[in-house]
Length: 137
Image 1 (cartoon, helix red, strand yellow):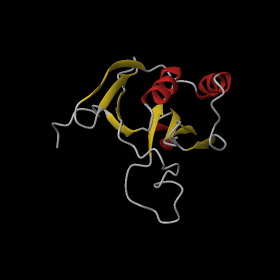
Image 2 (cartoon, rainbow, N blue to C red):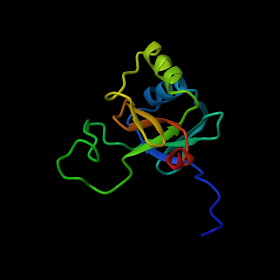
Image 3 (spheres, rainbow, N blue to C red):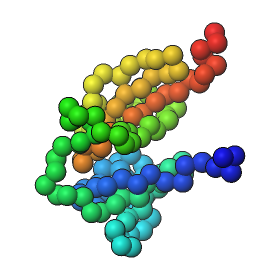
């Protein structure tokens, strides 16, 4: 559908609003509102326009990311990829914040990627994207 213009927000189920809020604020997100609504939901947004809705009804007893750690591979969103202008600077910032990488950074035909996990084990990819034009060279 040509009417779709962009992703509006990402819904992310978390177990503790304050822990998640503190973590994402370290990445530059700003608390907007909440919790509110039936779920309930709290909203954070990055100055770049990336909006995350924290859905605050997670099972507090579950510590396993069922989409990533289970032998059975369930369908569903496995991660969000945040585009960055400089992978090295972001990795240095994460190190200063004591946020470990999940594995080593790697180069691929359209850029450099690396991953971290949030406090609920949700996967976040950072990608320094060089574009599809790099494949034509």
